[in-house]
Length: 99
Image (cartoon, rainbow, N blue to C red; front, top):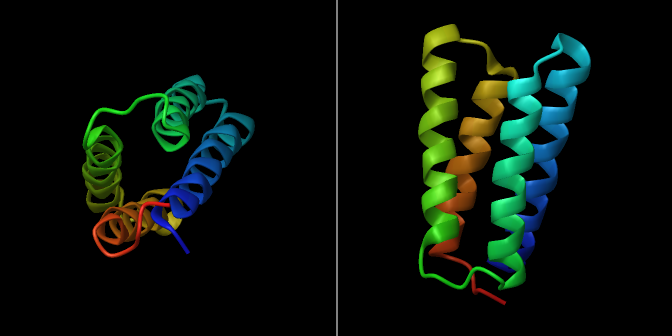
């Protein structure tokens, strides 16, 4: 598995979580932020944004964001799950090949 493939899986889960947040709780902020971050990460994964460490910075920000939400609310879904997933994606960036 490559890091880019793992990033695509992360993007799909991020957007799916935003859609679920909108459907279940009516959270427009969840929907729009997941679509925005998903779009930026998709542009990085596709090679359109080719600036070093942009994708890593975005995933790192999401790791901090979801980690803060998890420690504030102590609810595993979705904050705890996304914290763990963001951490795994970020660590795998330096362990897996790019393509």
